[in-house]
Length: 256
Image 1 (tube, rainbow, N blue to C red):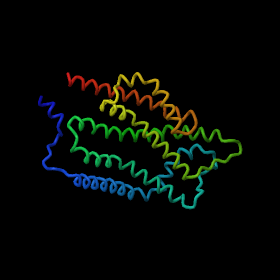
Image 2: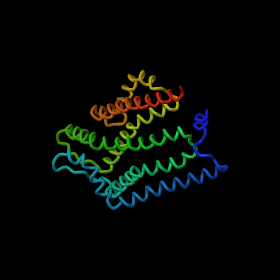
Image 3: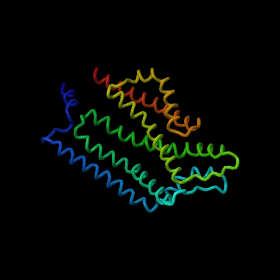
Image 4: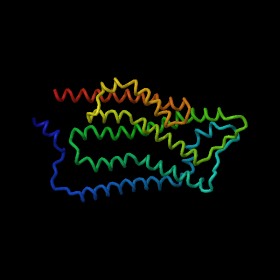
């Protein structure tokens, strides 16, 4: 009886009445800390902006024909493209600190059992997002760019614009980073009671079709990149079911 009471009340007793204004002030403080964290990382990386872009362009440059090079069709592109990349990279690197600020804001209102699940999910979601970006850069990009350069028509000189290339790779980074969050989404859906592991297993054929449809929408129009996104999504779908099943089993044992 006592354990059920503990799980149904916040882990830390509230010692004073907290008004809406207090919540808003706390939210503002956490947002400012997150922005300052991003700015600090950006200031540390701004000097190396050109080198960072050069590193990002390596998968394309290594597959381009000899004598080919990237171009800048806009006057300000040589400055703004590396600048934009550095801002996005600063957000990516600061993500653990941003999530920590989010956790610090919502943690006082969570129950003990919720804290026990949310904290690993936030850490896991960050690692999965980074894994998706690394998978896209080291595995997908070399294959996709080699395919694109190999099918160029005769007499066509490949000279990719640096801004177009940046937009393309950022789109793939977000696509693969979001796709690698499937296990987290499945765990949350099962934890909140929206669905169950058994129901998800029954919907596996629909997931297979949906994975290739999402791959078609989020990646370039070729079967290689679509498959390289769809197959990891299916594997992560199975991983999410396994983790959700073990957690669901633990909940049933606790209820018993």
